[in-house]
Amino acid sequence: MNPTALDSPMNVAMTPALEAEAERLLSKRTRDIRFSLEMAQAYRKNTWRQRSKIARAWMVWGGLICIAFVPISYLLAPDWLWLTAPISGLLAPALHACAYLVWRKPRSALVEGMSLILLMSSITIAYGSLAVAVGGRDYERFLIYILYADTIAIVVFNVEYVWSFALMICSMAIFSAFEVFNPSINIEEAIGTSGFYAMAIFAVTTARKTQFLIGQKSFLMSLRDQYRSEALKAANHQLEILATRDPLTGLANRRSATALIERLWDDRRIPKSSIAFIMADIDSFKRLNDTAGHGTGDECIQRVAGAIEQAMRSDHDAVFRYGGEEFLIILSNATPDLAWTLAERARCAVEALAIVNPGIQRADGSAGMVTISLGVAFARDGAAPELVNKWADDALYDAKRSGRNAVFLTAQAADPRSGGAAAASQPDIPVALANFKKMIA
Image (cartoon, rainbow, N blue to C red):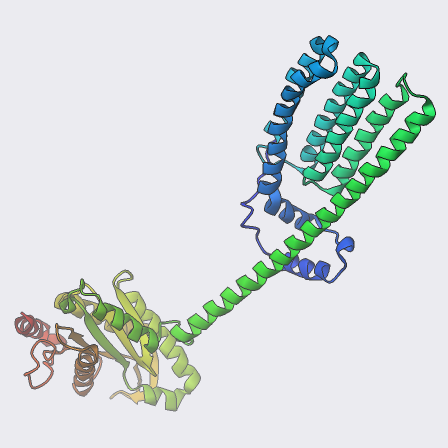
């Protein structure tokens, strides 16, 4: 009787096994559909809300109709109102209320089916006993009334066919037993009447089975559509990743950089002076490729990309593979001090990787290490992003010309009349920062 842990009916978890079973069952005829245990559980999850609402609506209206039957029974058998009132006005509504409580929460198929059988069997026995007490022509009339209610219940309750069939058997068994002991008809009439109604209720039960199978097939089709929709979403997501991500490094690509820059420039709430571009390039990368091979070069790019990304702020900065061995870093909410610190942190992080570049020979004959050079430029009002990118690129090449493995800040971002980049190698950091702050003030 404890509630079972069922998921939301709209969140049936699609598994490869369910998808394969759905395709297999849909290839068969509707009448040959047989669910596995996993599929049956998924079907019950999906249909729970609908089945529960229908069942509880039956309980409410069934109880109200039983209460309404009390004054009607007075017209049919006024002398037996003292017996009809407690059965129809109290007992029957109480049985419906108990079944209503069972159907308020998800239960197992056994509990659901047994609750319906116990409810309708109890109601049938109660009204059959009332028919025996009243007797006469009301005997048969009361029995037909309750069999009619059982027939409708078989149609209304959306349960597995085995429980619909069991409800039919119980209803006909109770009806036939009361018919056999009906003193106003002989045994042949009782058997004939029972057989007639048995054929009718069996036809209804068979139709209910067809309805149940059609419901299962509809579920399979919706499951297949859900699977295909999820597969399409996954494919579109993969295409989006391929369109916006660099497959080698996992960083966002140049197209993503362009999209982000457009958003930053279109957002008037963001001060342009807080946006900085950092262009970074692996020093002497062609020598590494020529001497160690492209496989080693790809591995070098991957490790450098990871080091640069780790050096940045995850909530304000974005790192892009701009092309080949070149990277673009976009800083937001940045200051010159912070931009320099982050660029220098990235330079040191790559240097700390100690990646050997056999294409570089030191004075002592040993191979050199992989390093990067970086150029930093700040945006300003009225400056197009292409111009800011050029400033950062100019600063990068000044860093290259100065001997590589350096960070340069450009002064051209602040004053377009300036003749060139204000080079600031590591020993001249305070002077470069001071000049840069003065020119952007």
